[in-house]
Length: 292
Image (cartoon, rainbow, N blue to C red; front, side, top):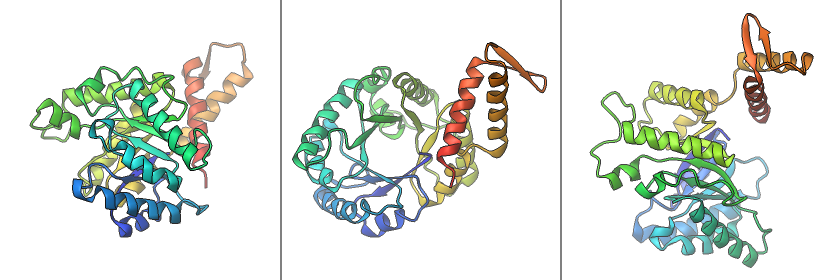
């Protein structure tokens, strides 16, 4: 998945529009975009949408961002939404693998109640929203077979740190948030799950979004969250391997196939080694996944 579009879980109109946004995944939000007094109504609205949208064959994957364990609202969220059979949950303010294991157990109990197979719902965890979470970013491996991705966030973290800002005047993340980004990326690699970049909040700034997507792709992220449908097309474009990239990857794979015992091969005056071969295979797998 390349694009993950947040949609407030209390807006039937926005939820319906999300289906036509082109996003690979919708993130139906019960957390930050919902006021405390609207949580219960948002659960009901989200459930009604799930019952309508999930049975549709040609649709994006649908996740629900629940409220974190620290809020005391997680159980109430899951009691309602699991029956709607979403593809999974986005687990905010996750504090390491133990928290994901805890979430897994909660999901398993609700799956049993609703007659769903164990493991039917996936988990995508937001790994850097608290100071404690930063020190646990390397603990997600083996926490749950449900875990399919790690992402990160700067907004809640900046509040917890007492920071005045999380970006500099040029729009680049400041040092504490660059650290969080890097730890999320490494944590995802260690857990062998997808690394998903955080949101770009200036949704009218297409050039800034494109640059941030390109930097994320360069570093190893394979998708990005969005806060507005206008961001989806750019995210999908940047995280889809280009024809030139596919051609280079195919050439690397072909060269090693012709020389199976080689540790390195030369193509056009450039030397490639075994890590390049694995990278080429990963790129072709992503390209194949996004073919229409």
